Image 1 (tube, rainbow, N blue to C red):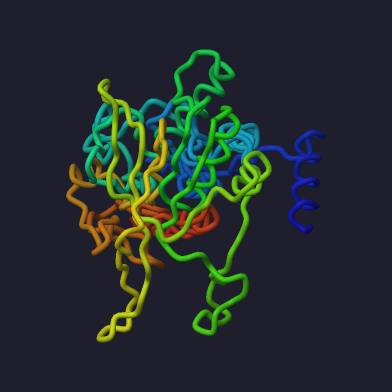
Image 2 (cartoon, one colour):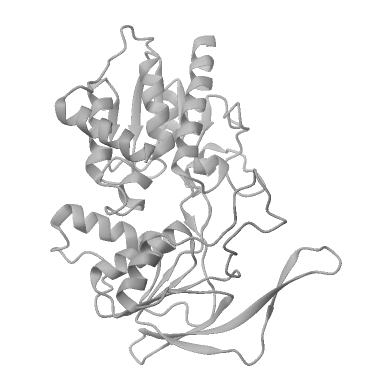
Length: 368
């Protein structure tokens, strides 16, 4: 594929030393703080540094990369790919600060005084919870808690330190589909889980586009990702089960989860609004064995402790309010880009947001 060819060329270029850092010929003297080192933050930092500004990136984790480092498992994205890009940026003059949690161990108001502009690129990291009976039981975790701990332990010690949530010999239930759910399936298989099942609330997509899903809209069709394919080969069947609503978690005397009770649902258009409505189907309750439950139901938006300290306004979806094409928040000199502005999305959209935000920040700095 074109992608494989391009990746092969880039890998060869790095191996041969053809790709080198390019520091700007002239510095503007303006200082920019980028909070968050995910796709949007790194893209913005690279562009702003190239424009001659002094860029400092603040990352609360112990490694640079944000979602790219701890949100995407190694089997999908080797961390050397992130590290080599970060090293190029470092060589070009970008300053990186790890274990720097702005709003907690880094004073956000001091940051505002020390820098001419601030970019919030913190991502959408508030997970959607499942507040049903038994939620407090041990063994129920958010997907990113599971994936982050696994990647950190893998990078620190090749999983020898034991500082991760193990799925070995466990019956795993992943609630929620999407890329994150798939990553939970793939990681659980690599741990050596006993079984893995994936609950999907929605109906199984059709193999071909439906009449109400025409081009150029994104095709809502049935897909098999790597995790589904691997689970099928190991277990003999696709791990996904559709139109399933989780009703309660059951545990043992020690407070550990032992099962999930579900019920089947059907989706029908509402006669008044024509919107699809979910209805439970009586008599379809089922109990699933579960030693480990992973909640992969998406994200509600960014965490608010930084924005609350600054007094930034939110949009109706609880994201940082910063209009597309402008990226400026309600506080002068503070901008926002990536998932914290647009909601959870793809890496490519984060990169695009970061680059466009950098252009607007550059314009703002040159007008000061």
